[in-house]
Length: 280
Image (cartoon, rainbow, N blue to C red):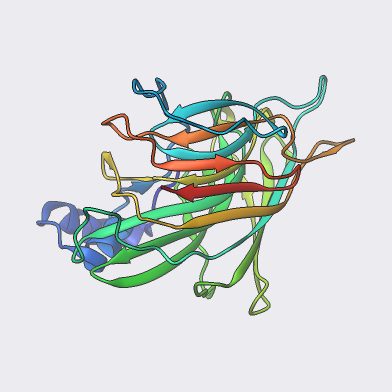
């Protein structure tokens, strides 16, 4: 769950923003991040689409397909017997978000790409890190962040990126209540790291899920308008336990399905170290 963060000294300012009419485009997005209304939500499952969808054969590396209103990607829903996941990592290329078909050139559209531990079958906590990509009024912007749900997400400072840059991201739990994240722009050589602690005793990690996700995240009380993100391919995907390193073989595929029962993504697992998410 990803929330924007404010300092305590800015509470009065945030209250003013919440009370004021919302702006539009990039201005609105910045205001919402400052006003603590933007978050990542755990997987929200939905029923399969009611209309028949012609699909190719399921990848040999995947198990079955699940539908969600907010996640697209692949999840290992259980570690090997007697073990827990304690690290997840991958690389991906920064996409260029665009206005989806039928959208407005003056509107705001976003999505996120991230890796994480827990948040699917285990919903009490998520340790995650990744980037947001937004097109707002024709302007494209990016944010890199880290989070331990249900605490607020925090943007990394000083981490810049452009479309086409290659991002490497890893999250590691050193215990059920402590961990760290590393996010590197391999194209520029810039690396940022952060140590984290569980926000409460009820938000310890279970180590039951490992995921590689593109998300339609939440702002305020509703999902943002999903950007056309083209294709996001996670490569070098690894999920670790204390004794094993696993890839994406056996992962559950998750597709985003709209409220009108339209499947908005096409997810595949081309190999045991990749997850490909296509906006369609």
